[in-house]
Length: 457
Length: 183
Image (tube, each protein chain N blue to C red):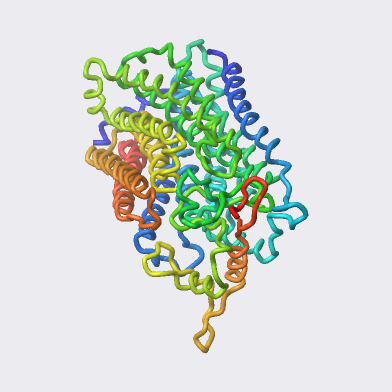
């Protein structure tokens, strides 16, 4: 099958060809990290079911493996994949041919090597207590520099675009790319290099964490949703004039929501209230993006058509998850409800909904669109695509529903009974899905060269 | 919205606004907190940490204990932390000012530890718990923190001694100007 299709290598556009090398590097590294993170989540889930599993050695304590899993997933999988997505989407929208592709490649290599070094240090016990800043402090400067090399190119593409045209995806990419280095530098300085006093650290961390998840990961993924919904459905975004308001309100309010994750913590109550207000104001961008996305897809049985399109099917699950996760955050940032579910599996499930069901599903959908255009060949197996979709969707659905249910049931109880089995089954399902995805992707990336060499062009 | 600089300036403004509004104003309010006596002329709280406890915090961080244990007790009416007997009063910002890394945590698979030092009875009890855990608990035994000598008794490693000293130093059993213990 791949023989016929890869003969059309000229079908790879010049723009795609110019970003091919860095995008491939980012996607390959992201898939490898995804596999690492999936194995780690299996082990972590197993440790909750069988606490004595791998407990004889300090290296494999639950605390350290959870840190490894989270960092491998966010920095290894999601960030690498978003480097690829942002670069590819921006190049294609801005008609940008990347001349010096070795620069993002260098950035990607440094990023991944630094991450590997940092995670090994964590495994050996050199870690900090702040989620997603656990790696030793010497790692961050290298990662910020690597980020600039790897992720700056969309901004260059935007600045040099030949026409004045602009699309909402481009704003989100520029914004998300700007946010990451700024918040990382600020948080590193205020937490690890010159630590602030007492609970200020918790406040700084919540600001960093919410910006990282909502703006860097969420902002990039929203850009991809806008792009692929318009591109694959062939329709114009409905109520497009609202998208500007959506973009600005999203960035404005999301960056204030940090304290809403600290309700009841020993920080000043007025700061918590500011966080809650910002969390409620997030309704504005949620409603606008929902109108944009579903207003575009819903008429003329667009949802049914999207369901038959691989990319849109993944993106649709991601979009629904975005809306649900954002609405859950709004509802459960009210003090009384938050008090019931804070510290429980409920918040874990909410986070999974955001970083997996929303961001990762959108990335999967985008990868199914981008990779064939880069390689000029088709996905080797449609069965594996189906397996991936259903394993990922059902696995994350199981994880989220079980977590929400368990966290909700835990309020008022005084024991710590953890129902670890759904989490374990979910982790196994996700692993199967990711393995299928990796098999398909690597099959495609390695097979494309073979036929042409056999035919000796 | 076609201009790169305009978008960058706007995004910079949104970040700068939240940075100033949350972090700078937080720093103004919290950055100058000092130790305070529970009553006029009394000893200052929070008490200085023993050196061994400072080492123990590193062990606590390095084993990733914060993944399952929080160190914050919410006020009555916001959750049932006080009703669960974790502390007699909510934790306040002043309790944390001497800690090099604040580990208030965000997820509970086990009890809150902010006042654990006041709840635990003896070092031996804590060592036995760490070495063997208890049936039905999701927390595994941390056997690698102990070595067995020839007569079959267990000796804690330096890490275990420091960790226990740290856990015993976690106390909010004093009155603070912001949160008095009920008489």
